[in-house]
Picture 1 (tube, rainbow, N blue to C red):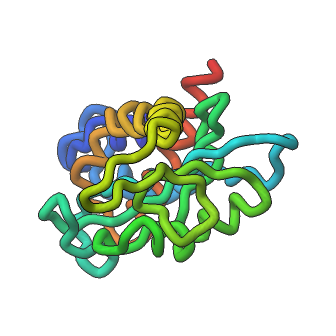
Picture 2 (tube, rainbow, N blue to C red; picture 1 turned 180 degrees about the vertical axis):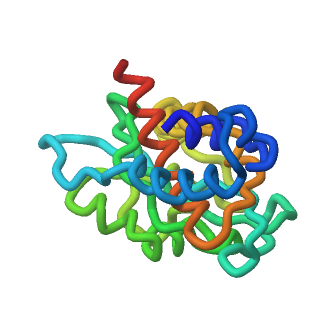
Length: 203
């Protein structure tokens, strides 16, 4: 488990990492393939009444172009929809990654994250339009928002920023800055890091 965590944290190549553990590159590859999925977060299926969730998408630069696409960060990336509990800031589910050119509205539904949040209040940003999420009021061209809407948006930002703090902590794991893994490797890494993030917050 320490090898997997070290690989995700440092993003060293296996050729660099394996000697630190006194094993071969091929052995380290097998260990990561075997234990990585076992660290993956198990999505929560039940929530206490009144639970409020926050969703947002984040881009993970990914070298496997079969699962990624050019995105607004000008790199081939995957879009990951992450849902947290607004009170505890624990990650409750991570959607299936989609190509990075998908907007958050479509990715929320297509990744399975929306289904995991059904029947609960979900707070999203302006990119989560046309879905069930609670989003801020939009400015109309040439029109200022009424004071009560500005106050609502300020309160919305104050709560929604918690998911941004979660992303900041998760992205200290360097594999989420330039993922070399192929296939579902990026999904396993994101889900595993979400679980380790939860463990760190509850320790």
